[in-house]
Image (cartoon, rainbow, N blue to C red; front, top):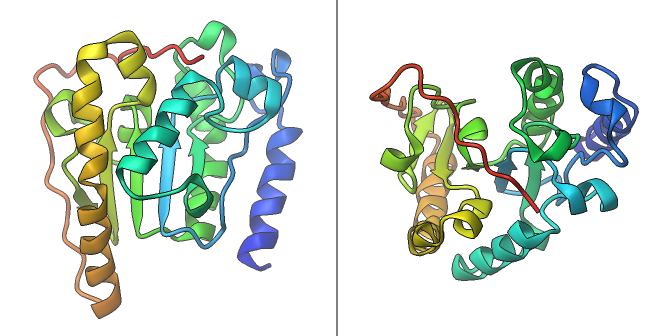
Length: 216
């Protein structure tokens, strides 16, 4: 199958998925959206109320802020692919559970394989943990790291600024730096350099749980 056919098939599977209990309360699954040949992939945490209503990612208040952030990076939504670690809304926008993350993991892996992005921007701790499980987002946000042949750029979830306004300036600054990370990834991919292995970030507390970010 072509990348486009694969992505359509993944979306079809997601809309009828019953692998975890999230399907009981969903109105619309949210597979994600964007061009299948996008160089940049954004991975959020999970759909919120408006996303569940429309079946599209980041269409609520956090989504409006994401659009603003993309402008700071000189990007438009139409040129990036946006998805989440879980494709159905957790009740009351609670944190996704481990079994829910596992249930959606295969869908996300297939999306990444099909899109083959140069840069993956993780929005929030749950998506960051896929690549940098021992990291603290407060310590490494905005700092790109190579994981295999992909440049991973961990960032705060846009919803963080809605709940903690003091983070807004940091989030904007991280997005302003995104073009430099993209340029770095382009150079590495184009000249086929040996990928740099990401350093292991240590968290100060192994038991620290991901911060809950309620989406709108």
